[in-house]
Image (cartoon, rainbow, N blue to C red; front, side, top):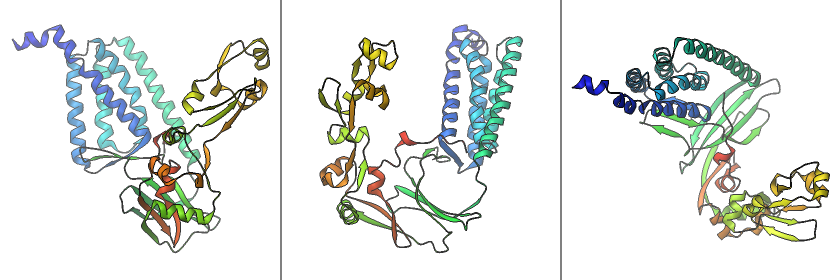
Length: 366
């Protein structure tokens, strides 16, 4: 009965649905390798979990190796593993089970020997060229200095973490303080800790290298910080994002068309506006298109068409009311960092300037 059940082609087709599921996990792992740094809190246990999952996946794929989904999956996983292997190079307790499983299912899948030879050669070249490019790029941008971390910590609210580093170079060195969000990391099973990268914000770079490094955190209110900023200058300007302009319910742009018509627009309306081009306009822009989106026009193209755009997103801080600041997501109070008695970081500015917005994350290959 069991042999008949497992020998049934429909049973194999159903089990083959697990192949793309496992492949999706590998793809997600590759994504994490680009945007997060892996820190294994329990390496031994983590290795056992990954190995167990890989063996289970390999067993299922071998059982369904002649199914189309499994064949496709066997081709996808090896090239996808290029990024994790390069970026997490050295963390073999995680990489080895995944890489060996991908390699095994590729060679043991139902693909023809000719297909395996061709694709195997291509994948080998992908790994060789990818590794060469990766190490050349990382070597090129690696600083020719010695950097030492002298202090790390977390703010009182737990929302931010900081790192103080001293860099020794030929110019008497420097001291740098970087602040990161402490809430954007990903943790799985309490042992796979993926620390976000590409969103670190430098709040201080001081030359020469400082011998004294006193970090103090205080909790200050929104109104207190506003008053402090006004005391510095009442002309402080901030550039708001389209999303923030929507939260305030303000128009983001004022557009004057070549017919003299003037319109104030939200960012949504601005990005949806279509400009119709007549024969003269097409000749001026040297295009055959009869319509173009307003936001796709360069400043030079707008000038040729006689269209002017005024951006309202840069606003003077003093024009924002306390209620508007609250609507922008600035809490009543938050963390302020002092370095040797001097303010270097305010939660207020971090939120207003969107320091840790994921849309600003850099791709991290190093």
